Image (cartoon, rainbow, N blue to C red; front, side, top):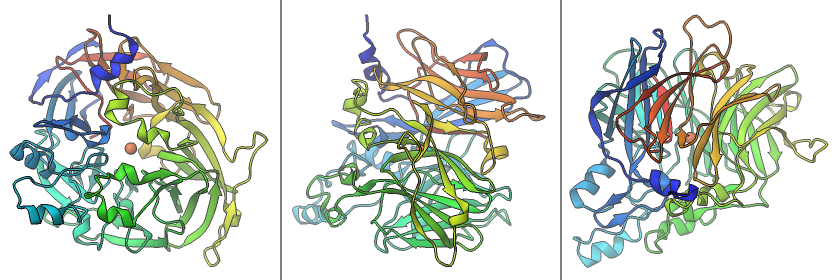
Length: 500
Ligand SMILES: [Fe+2]
């Protein structure tokens, strides 16, 4: 009999692809109005030849498609044919360095080229295994480098590589979590490591069918990294402001990054949580790109913002925060396969209050956030929620009530729950079934929805210990099961997805 702690060992493994769509067996009734493709992406292959990746975020990307029409569901999957994947396949070894794995120099090169290759940072990976994003009406797999891959949402073919870095100078980050406005503009934040500044970019919607993938790319704001570059994974966008989240996880030794190959260091090795470095929220005016204020907070680590909106007095900003950076180390495969250590803090759904009256575009202040009676500079809404999703089209940047997310099981190292939390009343509803490990919940509103939570929640559920995997359809209001679509293929944990 398997123990709980071996569940991580069972599910964090490489998978195979199933390019030909297979029918799912339906239990319950998938609503007739629900039509489209849930596309998900994540790490799907962890070994090449006799080499293995170290960190969960390193695995080569696989795409999963759940195609829904007339109450039926079809499943297919394909590896992203990135250069990382194709070169590793051709050479039967890991060719590109990833987040937590350093690729060794090519053994076929002569001794001098191998020696000098130790002193280069190497080409940034195009292994887009983090999110599915939309730009100019096309769909892309994305990661945290400037590379993306245009994908065909039906065949899951890897169509076209995109590199924002070709139009921008120097090594830089890029987020897998952009924002979109009602006009179809794409917004993202990048940190230039050379200029030591954060930059906000906009890509407008396509005007013609044949225009370049990133034509119209425009920098709309820039401001210095006052405390040096830090790690961040998402940002906020309200009606009038962008919210940049400076976490307390910083690059500990930027000069050392030049020698990372020689020292066999990876990007993760440079990310250090600095308990002395205050985290902060930069509030940036969307019209002018000017910083209007910087609000200092107690040190935290954050992957995901949830939502932010303006009231008369303040910007309400909700995010999933951690009091330290231990979560990053806990995502090494060797750790995840054992479960997650009890001392790793669960993510907290936090509400921060950024005072609007202090915002001054001509003379932006730097202010410490007030603390409440518990000594915290945020309101704790709920403990244990990650991969937050809201009714984005209707509520991003606006007052809202509901967030859906996953609850983490430390014992198994995987998400074991689905939650719906009312951020105003803190009322919580959950879905939790033995031997079932659900993925990020994606909310799809009913076409004639009158309420924020009128719709369904989709989640790909990994079955263990003989339980079949399935696509779960939940009622968005009460989190009861509407249908299951059993997939004749074993699923593995992926990261993010989008309903298209
Ligand atoms: Fe993310």
